[in-house]
Length: 235
Image 1 (cartoon, one colour):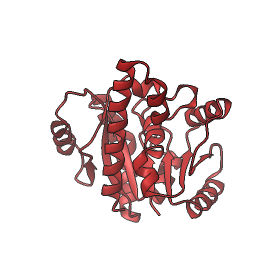
Image 2: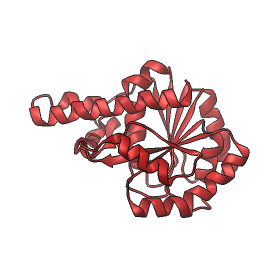
Image 3: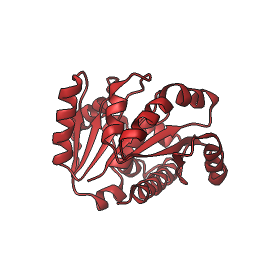
Image 4: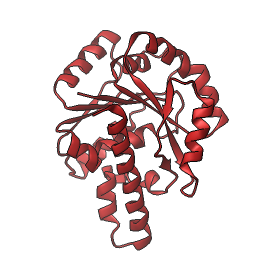
């Protein structure tokens, strides 16, 4: 039973967008029976999204949402253990934290695959080296997780192999990089309004050819990522 976590010490890198998109992807629904979407971020973006879904009477099929915020470490670990036992796959949306953040450490201890959403930005690279790499080094000594950069908000016309080569050249050898990326698309900024998933949003804008074309491209982006994430995890 795989556990996937989206971890990054900085905000604005796409952790929550990816958590939503991957959990609701056709690929994950086909691969796994019950999927748990777990929010550890006190910002509560996923909880707000779920609230919008409820208000607009949208239902999930085979996806459970859990908000685990404000719990002490032992209580959090216990609850996560229960969630893991009751689902076929777990996706953790982890808050941006400094090097001392226990949610980040716990996610790394539990996860099979830790995905690090990251822009090609010197700020993101500095934050990785200062806040995330020390935690990863500690985790590598004790746990079995694999680690991979997931490049985010890349220009759609960029050669993705160049992006991958770039990250592999600057990252420690223990950190891989996915071939697929999350491109910069306006759809990723807008789809979750009114609690919609990406497929639901695509359906809702069928009457607007420009928005629908963008939404279809965004869906393909997410499905490609979902397939590669499953492949990298060994599922």
